[in-house]
Length: 296
Ligand code: SAM
Image (tube, rainbow, N blue to C red; front, side, top):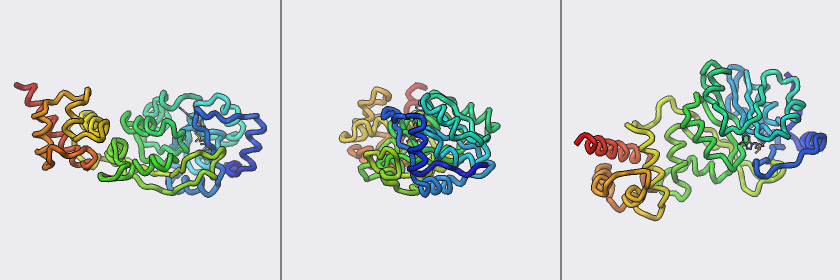
């Protein structure tokens, strides 16, 4: 396999000029131009020839070349039609890469893993388009894509949100969702000058290692996530009011207060003070009270 040729400013500019490519802001296009960062991403994703990697947003194929050298197989999903002829050129000779011209949010990645990897877990590695980071990550988890890990470049602030616990301003629904499915670990902070064009925000590479079993036991996952969303939708309100006012939940004030006291908290507690374990316990108590009510 050919050594990667991209990853530095000169070669990136040469490719962009050859194809007269103009960056599309609406697609979150900030291409990596730093070989050290690329090496670090590939190393921290611990890719082997046994792995199938799905790359979201290959751009001009910079990281794709590195992934092709490390992995058994790569599927790269790119929305921008203008990049497809460029990818055909930059990925020539990298026989283990399949480029899919589509919106990642519309691609059935579980089906792709089944067809291309015999249903075995895949690794997702990407420099993500920041405007859809949360739907991409949540989609991978909630659609039960067989996954070993996700190693991605995201906005620094979003990486922080994914890994913090209760009692900090960044703690919220994304932290709880990510930590229910995976163990997060920030690999590196990456400054704007490692990209072309430079983004206005700082970036970080985060690795999410999928748990075989979630760290807490919940009777009804969907109910727990409705409760979590309701708790953080009205951050300044108490947890009890947040749950009472949510159109997604149908519990009475008494049921809510009893459940909150049941996990050993005061009824004036705020959602942002609860750990994942406490949200799971609360959700199980509310699940039980709903079951009793419908039995009556
Ligand atoms: N991987 C390249 C790199 O590191 O140089 C490009 C990363 S750039 C931050 C994000 C890429 O995602 C762009 O190529 C953009 O066109 C693509 N993209 C944006 N929205 C997308 C979507 N909904 N589905 C698939 N690709 C998308």
